[in-house]
Image (tube, rainbow, N blue to C red; front, side):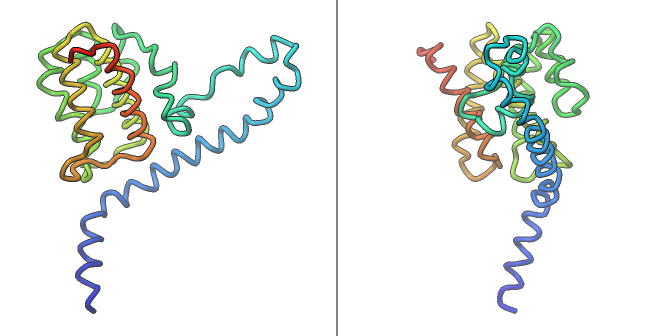
Length: 198
């Protein structure tokens, strides 16, 4: 009886997070299953390393693998080479991110400056509105990466401050999985040496 109010509070407060877990775990399970099915193919080049045609196609890991399993290395090449002139097509139809994708594509710095924090904070809040896939969260981090590589210093500063806010998480406003935390840290570490005066 004494524990029921605590249990009720915990249930109410974390219901949204708990509801999202099946989707996130299914995404991770699908990725692991895909990797496991490819494992014999990844090992065969080691046995046949003299045969160049056998090894060439295995240099790149499947999409999302590096982000989930080696986030300290930062975003994989498939995310880093997105063309900013065609950015919206990379983001797709995700309702929260597609306006940001169009703004990046159209170099609409006014929209980016006004809307970026709200969009990213809504995605990583500890009480998200509606369902959020792990892909949406990774794509949001990829968008931050590309905004750090625009030629607009005021956007660099804003994005850097936003990343710092997510990492420090003062007041527990945000919820980050460990791989997301590591990806954000790698963005910040990569960016700082390029602009030491900021």
